Length: 411
Ligand code: MG
Image (tube, rainbow, N blue to C red):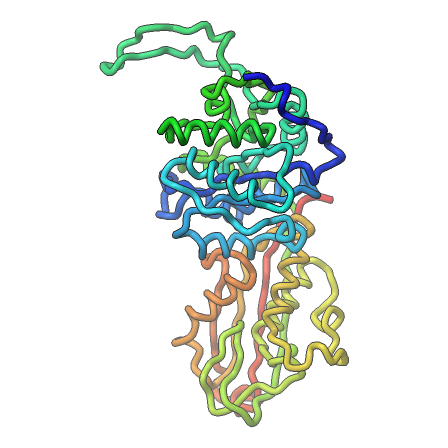
């Protein structure tokens, strides 16, 4: 099929002409823990968050749309909590996938076709490729501008054998003519949308990459150099290797501490870590007086050497009157994320006679993990009394000590 009718006026400086689809609808959980692999944590964030970040870094003005499984809306929502504001603003509402990868991509393309401005070039990325470099992502767009259909490939270093059903070798193809292909794959939008629609009409739904779709539809598909570092993270061993690689890039380990006290006074219920705990008194303060969130916010800001809660959210500022302190905590996490860092752990001790914390410990941990966008195993909450001694012993107030470990890249 001729490419002449495919209009390729866009260039890299016109990123509004591009769109990215990230295919994240798979059910594969081979790597363990029951979660579809794109949602499994890698260095403290779901793999999909890393994949989105790499795309946004490479193509700062390009809209990104994920194709997710309809059952995964909560998991996708958690991914959003792991992105900073810039990354979130790139994301279009997700499209919903089908039973095969091919159908999922077609659904994503259909969503793009319905958008106000149809892209000229679409880049299709697998959620399980968190290491695609900026240069590779940009190269895929350039290659699609030249060829209409372009996929990254690397030479095959192992000798490949073709086998029959009994695992007997029937052929040894010439290695020099073979390429192992990767994503992102990039296409003129009209070309790949047409190919997907033709395949749907022909009843074909199980082609495993979009290059195969374009090939099936009769287009020439060009290979451009892929990167061996652009690994597909699938097995438990892949996850382990990927985690090691990501943590190696965050060698600057820092610790911060926070301490806060609020008085108990008239009211009903106390806020601790974003959870309202039933009590016959309330904590008194300018905001919601969530003493735990305040101490944790200071621990994170302290680790970053980034001021304290008072310097970011002055009590003299009326906009923080009655504010939900989860905002403060989330802001601290976002500031860390925008520096490319991660929270390794956060731990707090709540010091009070009453209310009893034990029955609420797990709901508080869950709340903190959601606010900070980190996995539950990185959040610890402990409680102690002071044996009726001092202001906490007299139930005049609640004190919290918090400590956080963070990892940062070397500047
Ligand atoms: Mg406070």
